[in-house]
Amino acid sequence: MEPSFFEKVYAVVKQVPQGRITTYGAIAKYLGTARSARMVGWAMNHSHAPGEFIPAHRVLNRAGVLTGKHHFGGPNTMKQLLENEGITVINDQITNFNKHFWDPNKELA
DNA sequence: TGATTGACCAACT
DNA sequence: CAGTTGGCCAATC
View 1 (cartoon, rainbow, N blue to C red):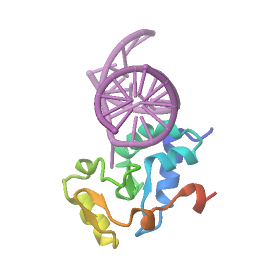
View 2: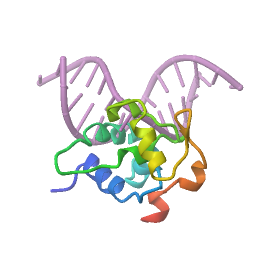
View 3: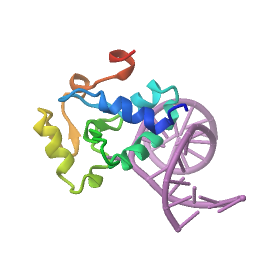
View 4: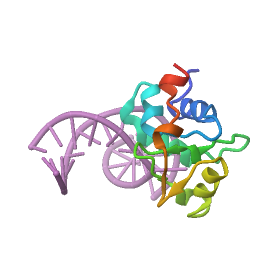
């Protein structure tokens, strides 16, 4: 049984270290299909799976914008989580994007 | 069972 | 340079 696409997404997202963020495109590219970034977001939508904690708040779009923050139960929940990990969020966008960026293609390889 | 949508990205016009 | 379309996999209508 080969893991489905979104199962791979879960595996990668769960490996994102605290205080770091990654992008949908980076994950999708790591999985081999850079154009399947929509699936990554879709997988995050199901990140509420029982027994599985997915740090979806560490996954942003390529611009570092908190896309999908509204799916965290509150418009500021995602922001609070990131700030709690030491990431500054301004106007739904993180600062030092390049500094906090965690690229699975480089880190995991 | 077929069509549409979805927390996106990249290419084309 | 800005707007539009295509594409990917899986789930819902």
